Amino acid sequence: MLNAARLRRTSDIAAVREHGHTAREAAFSCRWSPNDLGVVRLAVSAPRTVGNAVVRNRARRRVREAFRSALEPMTGVRGLDLVVMARRDALSADFPSLRRWADAVLRAAARP
Image (cartoon, rainbow, N blue to C red; front, top):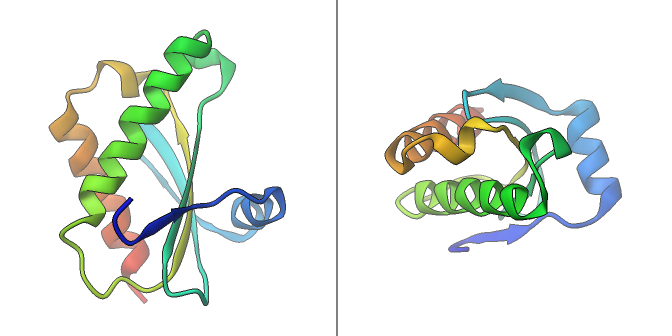
């Protein structure tokens, strides 16, 4: 990801889920929290209600790519930790809509 890293540690993800701000879109819900690292870190998950492993992986890849492409043109974004939960609509939504929703969430999260 351009100027982004993966949020991997369970303790970091739990902290964002517990103390972060929330945004909900049709294809995903997102919680975010500022970090002091100066980089955007992203974790994407999909519950079993989305489908089997193949379907969940596809949903995660689509959402991750939407956030990656939404982050590309943004400059000067402060450090953020994002935890995104993909929904079933992430599979059927067209990619421009996913990108637009990811952009809206990133802009909301970038506000001080």
